[in-house]
Amino acid sequence: MARVKPPFAVTKKGIVVNLGSDERDLLRRLFGEVEELLTSASIGDPKLARLFPPAYFNNDEAETEYQRLMRDELIASRLSSIATVDEFLADDQLKTVTFAQLDAFCAALNSVRLVLGTLLDVGDIDDYLDADDPRHDELALYNFLSWLLDAAITAISHNHGAS
Image (cartoon, rainbow, N blue to C red; front, top):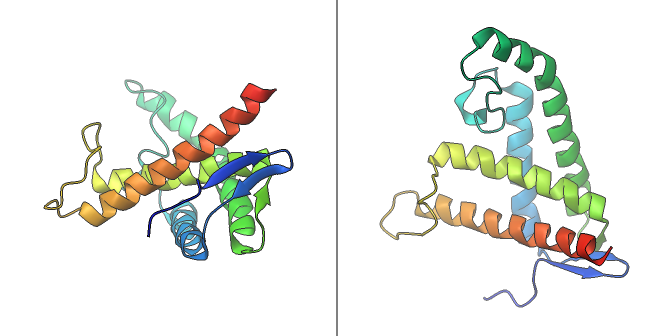
């Protein structure tokens, strides 16, 4: 069945969330998987490479110090976004969110995309879906998440443009 409504619509009362319960459940599961990775993966886990890109490429000492100082803060920020989003996605009755909640959604969703993109080794040329690609279903999910992130950013931008 084709989607009729955009996933987010800006109103005077906030942002209307047009996500069905299946979509909400899928997103909550994906956010939960990233949360598990964030709380259990070791430093240097390749699945998290895009979540924690190096700040210093040619200076191992500086990079180690940067990771020591910033990693916990970055993890806490990502976990906070996931918790905010999980709370509103868990409530099927909640149809309107604030711009701050949608901002947290963007951060959490981008974390999922970065991890999935790493696992799939997605590059700039992976904008298409080839039915013969063994990663077809996973790439379709990645494209769906990218589209959803774009819709959320568009809704946030609409608000800032109206200010």
